Length: 114
Length: 109
Image 1 (spheres, rainbow over the protein chains, first blue to last red):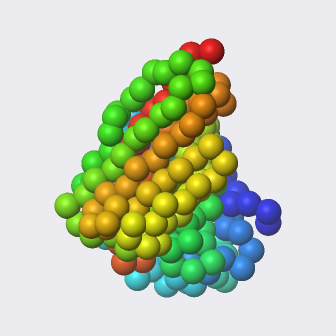
Image 2: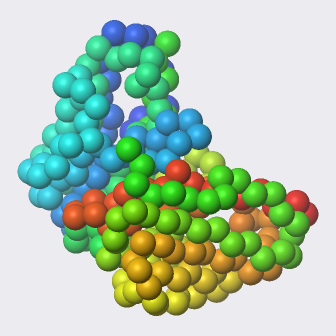
């Protein structure tokens, strides 16, 4: 597509429920990144993919967080047993190479855990 | 945690004024980038810097990559109302970008 597309744009969920956040990168972009932005904070790295593999998962905050990418395209970030501290905007970005030319970000998914 | 220290945290300026913000790090970065984020949107790349000492302009924006590779600044000349937003610096670390906490810019018309 023309840009990075994320869905849903907003998600309200009850504490303890699982959520799935989807990212459609720009066609042909081999690298895909997930970041989290809490209110008033900068962007916190979660995980990145090169193709379908994830060489760096170091930013995932706990084992409740997981992500996968299939077909070198769409990625899904899953949060199990959501907690209130998971509330944030989850941003996805993609790039042709590995970040040196900058990423193109999606508009994010605003997750609210109540 | 954050490795980039960005300042100021926020600024409130008059339309037409020039703006300056900077970013410092205790680590060396070989690529620095500046992004702007509007409400409800993802950050958008403004300027990318690849060489120590490099000075790059993009319209009213000018950014410099510090000689030590541990700092960068962004200047906005003759600010206009649409410059409001959050400005982030970012450094390339391995294969991922590390972001500063952002500078919130508000412009009085």
